[in-house]
Length: 415
Image 1 (cartoon, one colour):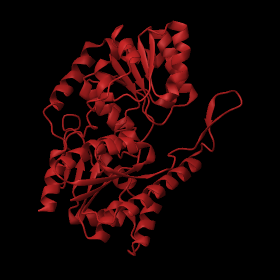
Image 2: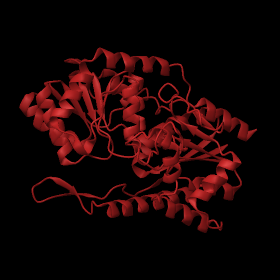
Image 3: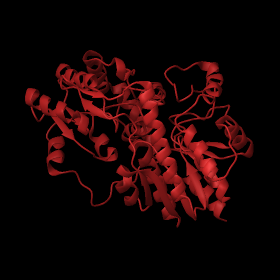
Image 4: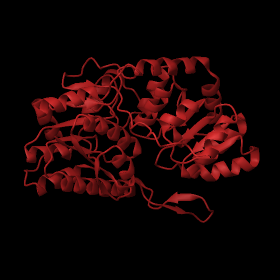
């Protein structure tokens, strides 16, 4: 079968899709992945065709008068304008990739894939990295800062009516395909009634199956990024630096760079703790260079794009934003987490880490200080309880086969 997988989003959205796609290819399917142009190597290395689009997910960063970085047009309106343009570009790429597809898999921000499948007369399913169905077990992911208990389900229903940046893209796709207009709420009701399957790349160890979920929703287990290729190896400098001292605390803050205040909090925390650290990502390279001069290059390391599956098992703890992908990677490695959540599902995963005794109490990124981060980093790097909690989850995950349910579904669709 020719499988079309829609994966707009950050690297954390694309990497699990690439790993899932590789399992489909092993079954003899042809897979095309729609994702940002910057992820073409990741998609192609998994054996998939890549259809890309080039659009930013946030307003551009420009230097301010004092040399710090600031976002041009950083207000909510400007940010939503950029996101709508991003979603529109992703939808255009999906339409271009769709002819000849036998099945379509969508993610949380590409529900127009179901319209494309309907137009083609082929089946579709949702393949999600976050829970989306309204449930008493969790708040809506669009605003997951507070767990509302029994009111979570009501809040989830309300959230479904809130306009999203991908609504205009959905409307345009239906229009271009000659389909009648349809509100998102109506589309969701119709697909629920039809029994549209929704698969989640989430382990039941990390999120127990909610008791109010219908049968069409499944928790499959994590979809891991493609395994590190046989010919991949870290450069000798990084490998040697890691081997020359105790495991470092890894600080990795995703593909969306933090602001200057966050970088300063990281720098201050490193000074306060005296812990060995490895800062990952271009945004933290200036901090690493400055700290290396202050406390020694053997004490503060820096790296760029290194697979988390290789890096995290070599860490004492990991500081991250709490996204679905990096949370799963830290659990898989069996290392404690310090989370600095920013938005959407990140606070939810941060709470799950605490519940699993695998992470410290989170610090919202907007309120992070050097003192707060230093305290959490020290706790994560030294706590036997947190190390034990993370290790227990890691051991349980080794028995799961996340791609299996969707592989079975594809076999049934092709029979």
